[in-house]
Length: 171
Image 1 (tube, rainbow, N blue to C red):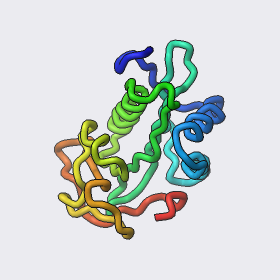
Image 2 (spheres, one colour):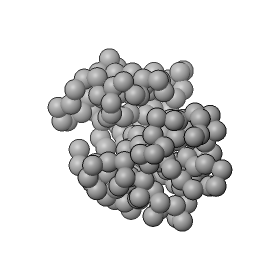
Image 3 (cartoon, rainbow, N blue to C red):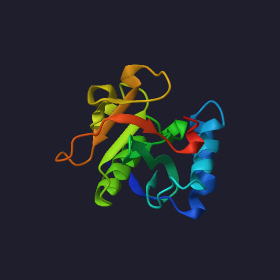
Image 4 (tube, rainbow, N blue to C red):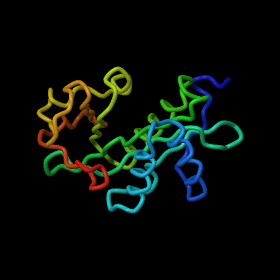
């Protein structure tokens, strides 16, 4: 079994698309998440290089993380879309490796802010905090602890405002 620190991470390629779809279908109860990733690939919110896979030494992806464009008010930001890992590789760092690689790539690209709707116990370890503490909200009602945000550049505090996601999110 692989450990937390020995995953290879890289940008998703066109050849990875069928495998990424399999990962998402295996990791979630419905095909909605796979459909969301497919829809994001054709949306202007897609940013090449911010769809990351984690793979073992054989190079076959087992995990996937995706950042797409969103806005906090009028300020450009990124949104962490569904993170998925094949069930047999869950809880051993494949998802975390993909998230960390996506965040590092975004930072290298000069991106400053990231939002996420997700499980409150999972994302704080990456530096996410409650979005509401910064005046960030949504147009839909979600549990306060599930809407999180982070600044990739500590010299720029998070902006406040309402998050506008890409159309495929339906928010």
